[in-house]
Length: 271
Image (cartoon, rainbow, N blue to C red):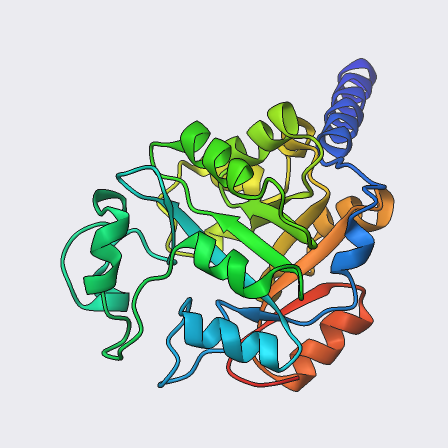
């Protein structure tokens, strides 16, 4: 019996050690310093007149001294559009997917019933021109490598602080493999508390950041509601990886997150 107990204990210790190793990230990227100390407006500084991920919302964020978080999709013609959902219904009221549109068709997609239309990524880069940092979320469909390659190419010659992040670890892994100079982040949350339809093992691995050994993220971007987890204690305190948290809805949430050392992404108020 003692041998069985000892064997079980040894196995548990081994598995625990492997898990700790799996949560490691990359530290020391020199570009991270330029991203810290900023407040980031989630999809721009948006409201009823300035829809999310619109040029009006991005201008408002820039004018008020904020960095921004924004989402990019790959269009049918190989260019990049700035929009959160793949499905166009919620943001534009029209049927279809953003990945089926061309750049020319973006002008007919009005956001939130306003005169604002879906911007191209190039328009946003020209607006910001390095004046404030960008947190760029890669929204992958069945086009992971093409999306990553196109996004990286779009940033060639861009003079200003930025990073790239994704919920899809394949995107972050490709950034590590092909473009290690870019600051990369793994977006995640408690998938068991969400409506995610991912397989249970993948939910567990993403929630507990057990795939970090494949992606070696420079930062973890964790949902604020779920951020007080054991995995974040390991990733941030033990391994020293930077943390971004989203989406902060009140000044109290904002202040607590900043005090805890998280880079803040906010929405629906102005900190």
